[in-house]
Length: 328
Image (cartoon, rainbow, N blue to C red; front, side, top):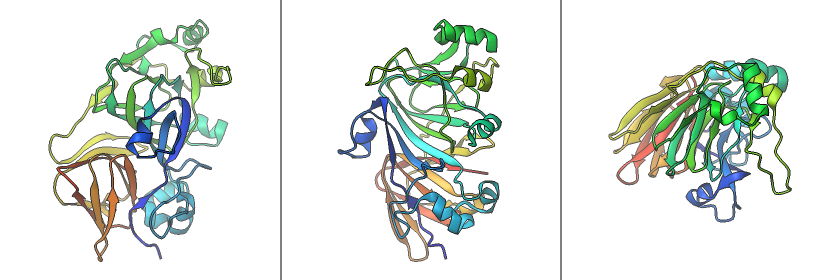
């Protein structure tokens, strides 16, 4: 029988050449090392599944729990679609330097080439330093032949939409859209459980061994959506309590949630588990007939199982804010 409680996970920290110190500081991890670019908060990526770090299931990974309690954790619909694979990866990203210009394949190419999900994703901007840039999609009409010429001539950047993000900006990136995160951005990323990335341009930089990182030009050119778009960005910040939709797509549904007083949050009625990514404030999570308590701090993430009817959230302070994610 499944013991129903909010599941927290050990963050999977990624050290990369473009990473910074913000994740280490905000998560209070003094021994974590330097250049941490990503904290994988909850991962269903095969071979890199998240491990529970609280309660009776501490030490078990999400895949093993799904193999035993699948429908109780994710719900009948999600389990029928994905079985023992958790379908999402949520992370914090701290870009102290520019990330590469890249693209992710859709489900068909990813399945054929990598036996993987594709990678549709969404960014919610938590902080952007003055002058920080994000790139999303093409600014001019192009095609595979023309864009290959731009890659080979080192002129990729002239073809990309450039944005100067602010806190609360939202960027939805379906698979196939060329994109890049510039230095000075700190954000939440929600995506399919895939780590397949095709690197297009890496600013000619070298790693600690003096080597350039591999580019994946041919695979990228096959995966890119060459349609020209301009209106990629939305903006959403909550000035009062409530829940407001960020984006609903066929991979996930995300919303912003702000709570200022004790509030009952439904879970099972959504037909899905619910992920809460806390980015402001701290909260008590009250659950079960015995009114047990779990604490959630800023820069932490929790998975609320489908079989949990609801949960009471009590802010520990003026308010608490989350990005919430379900699969419908």
